[in-house]
Image (cartoon, rainbow, N blue to C red):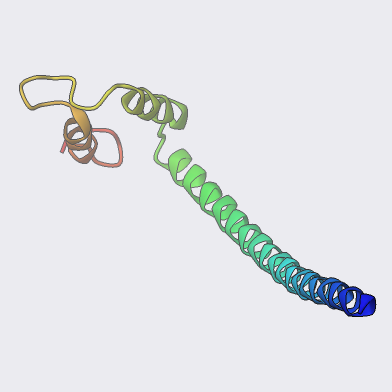
Length: 112
C-alpha cells in the first residue's frame, strides 16, 4: 500500500494549508479592523487638537487681558516640576507648597 502513505501525507499537507489559509483570513480581518480603529483615532485626535488650539487662543486672550506674563508662569511651573518632590525634611515643600502659592493670588497676581 504505497499509495496509502502518500494519501495520508497529502491530507496532512491539505489540513496544514487550510489552517494557514484560515489564519491568513483572520489576520487580514484583524488588520482591517486595526486600520479602521487607527482612522477613528486619527479623527478624534484631530478634533482634540482643534479644541486644544481653541482653548490656547482663549487662554492667550485672557492672559493678555489680565496682563499676565505667560512665559514667566510657564517657566515657574517647569522649574517646580523639575525639582524633586518632598526635598524638605520638615514636611513642607513638594506639591502642596506650590499649590498654596498659586491659590493665594488673585487673577492680577496680587495676594488675596
